[in-house]
Length: 144
Image (cartoon, rainbow, N blue to C red; front, top):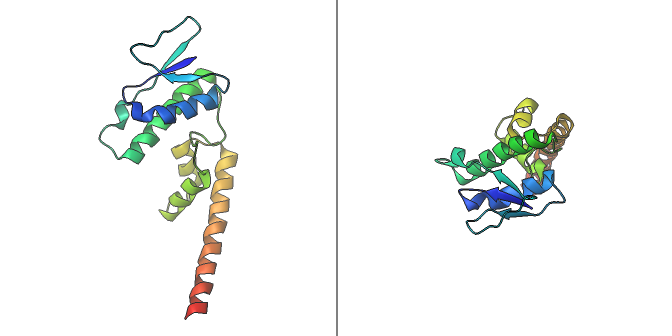
C-alpha cells in the first residue's frame, strides 16, 4: 500500500492518478492520523506549498508537475504524456497554440511529455486549427 501524505486533500485525486501511473499494481490511500502502517507500506510526501496564492488550475498544474518530477526521480520512469492524466493531451496543446505558444519546446517544458508525443500533439493541433479556420470561412460563406 502506498500512502499519500498531503496537507491539502483537494489534490488527492491528482496524486492518486499519478502514483497509479508509476506504480500500477499498488493501492493508494490518503495518509490519515489513524492510518496503520506496516513495514511493507510506503509513504509519499506530496508537497502542496507551491500551490498557495494561485488559481485552482495553476495550483493543480504545479502540484502535478512537482509530484511527477518526484516520482520520476524515485522510479527512473518517464510517462509518455508527462503529467497529463485524465485529460485529452491534445486539448492542452490546442489551448497553448491558441494562446500563441507555437514553440514545441514550451510544450515539452510545461507538461514534461516525451519529444515524440510533443511533436505529434503540436503537428495535429496545427492541422486541426487550419481545418477549423477553413471550415468556419466556408460556413460564413454559406450563411451570408
